[in-house]
Amino acid sequence: MALRLFRFYVDSFRGFDRAIWLLALVTFINRAGTMVIPFLSLYLTKDRGLSLEEVGWVMSCFGAGSVVGAWLGGRLADRIGYYDVMVGSLLTSGLAFIGLQYVQGFWPFCAAIFVLMVLADSFRPAMFVAIRSYAAPEQRTRAITLIRLAINLGFSMGPALGGAIIVGWGYSGLFWVDGLTCLAAMLLLALALTRAHAHAAVVSNAAGAQGSPYSDRTYLLFVLAMVLISIPFLQYFSTVPLFYSDVHHLSEEYIGLLLGANGLFIFLVEMPLVKYCEDRRFNLFNILRFSIVLFVLSFVVLNVVPTVPFLWVGMLFMTVGEMLNFPFMNRFAYDRSERGSPGAYMALFSGSWSVAHIIGHTLGLNLVEWAGYTGTWYFFSAVLLVGILVISLVERRLSRERVG
Image (cartoon, rainbow, N blue to C red; front, side, top):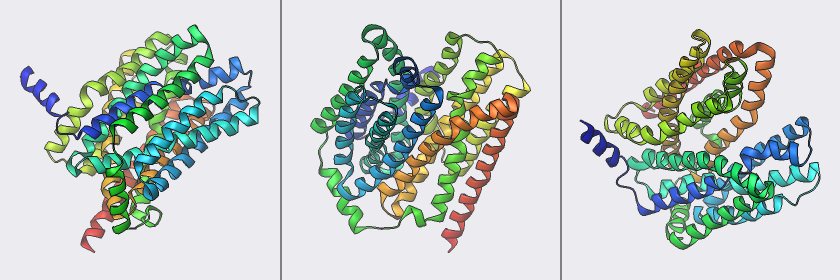
């Protein structure tokens, strides 16, 4: 039994083009090196002396730049190819990270962080288009899952390394390491991946469908569902840790253990879980609805059973929901992008995540202050139930399209 499980686990990683593994490695290097972002609020308050209100404005510029970057990256990927966009994003954002430490003044820093995020997040839709080009249709869900593993592994390492760098070299060391890892990822991509596929993708797109995602009402509904799902999900990285501390009086170490279990479980289980679902050919929308129900349960259990052991149950529900939801949401976006410009479709998909970031953290913190944690968890449970309704509307529209 154990041997069969091990073989199934190994098989879930097989069959990918070399370029997919390269993209995963580039993503890991890039995300592991992104150390400034988790410490940005500390840097701005302790090193720059900004007020919390000013930090809020900086984070708003951060989110706005992310939205613009996603749109620009997708547009450029359709015009000049994903390869040049990815290389250009890594090169320019690497230089921007290094230069950010020298920006003086509140408003100049707001402008600089906006520009940095435009440059950095133009990488994401271009990478999605690259995966679409290198992975066969039946491999795309697993391919994006592999990239997610690289992102999670990189994000789990980044803050730990960042803390050590701050102790040894101060905050300036973070900017240098962030910039240099972006440049290292760019060099690896430029040396190991050719432009041929990217150029072929641009030619193919020019000769193929030219539909716009902005006139695709079914896809717009899907993007709305993505925002409605992502806003509650993001609470696990903002308001939920505060809940652990304020209500259950958990230490930072215990909270870190809870959050770290999420990344470890994803690393161990997500690929074989996605492969199992695809091998059994489960209905895509049933998977998505079930995943959202798990998100709902992860919040409800915090209210219904307010004990520390059930915090682990809530984290488990959220983690399994995450593993089922986001790879298959990506799968739908990929499939739908066949109707038009893939860069524009994936840019809108990436932008929905950025919009959720802009809304989610501030909304959650304000709700906690106004309605308390109990009211906040029930509010986000209701938002997720609306997300299920919207997903079902997307499925109904697809059925009508097939009949028509």
